[in-house]
Image (tube, rainbow, N blue to C red; front, side):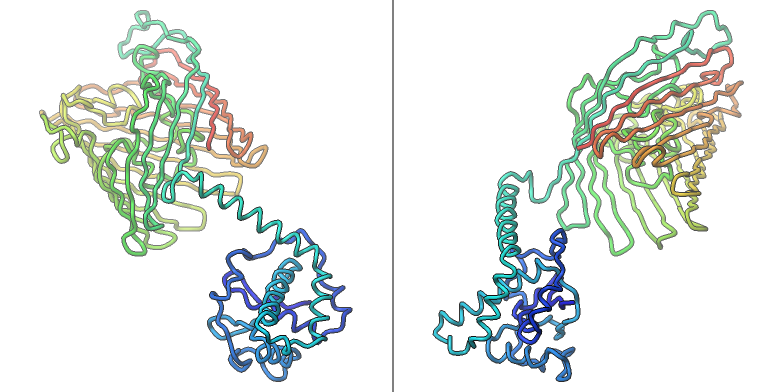
Length: 538
């Protein structure tokens, strides 16, 4: 075995390798590995520079080389006669590390350059005839490897020049996502809130084809920070209102801006010490992007197909602009604190940074045993009646009564959430959540209690690497007790989807979910939503 004399970070002079062949019989050459598929562990262009090495003038400067070592005399000769030895900055030589034939060829080439330099400076008398013969033999032996290395270096230089000429930015990376969706709703009639099923409007069940495109520009200034700017265009119908009569049927990736390009996300985060991170959101940031939700179906592009099935609605009760603190106690415990508002740019009425709709969140996540994570979440929210965004206690999930239990009167709420995720095996994860909210009217003594829950089953890599099968069963937000109107019946959300990972950049997700007794009203017929979502990432 030939010893390696350089590592990934620092290259020791290849002449050291030649020393081995000066003292070894020629039969050793035949024992060098002929596996030409092994890639060198260093960049020849960057690491052949002598300036990156610690030049030594005596073998005694190498702490791990002893006079009893078999190569000591050869090393000593190369140091004294050729000045061809360089060690690591810590004064070690590391002569017993293995090397590839390509690395040997690179070292030989560098040593030949040193010999040529000596000859060119009229000191050729220092070069013995026997050494030159050895070098010539080695050069012939590794001529193929040397030629291959020269070709690779030339190709690398050409590619580097091309990348530098065409790079988007030295600090900013572009990543994008495009969704094409074919989707429709199925059922007899749309939902309403009264007890007369004969006056329900027709369900708008035409099949649609729509899209959503997101361009994310991620910039880092210090390596551990990120400025996210997202541009978005979309025209995916929100299945609610005149379409289905209930928010329970909304897709997880919907939204219609007539495909106008808008600023959808803007935030900046940076580290605060070794364990903390500060996030400043300036516009339209979903809180789930900034704190952990413990949901395997969180992504709108590759996760659950429904809005309710993505994650606990408690994360939707805060705004989209504000400040977040993430603190990591250890690998098994973390704390999130957030203050988010909806209309910070509007100084009129009950808006602005402190007078309008806001949510304050505190969340503690811990791992009591391996692969089992638990989250405890508390949110205090305030919804100003009559504001531009209106009262929305449940993030446009659940019944209309749960969204606005006191109409559009100013309302505050205290919500307690429990989230869990148990990775039972690499191919099966059991997750879920439970949230109980106490709502209070700010203009009267009215109050209401709101409940929602869900259980999710995730099957990663089912049928192939990157695939994901998902099942969601739960109850969308429901007013279970109120001084005004309670939801008398119970709606259930039942969902199944399968994400097929076609390539690293393309996935196709067919899925369906059904809402029984929409609006928690058994006078409404069940409504089924089906979709085929194709997602491109690039």
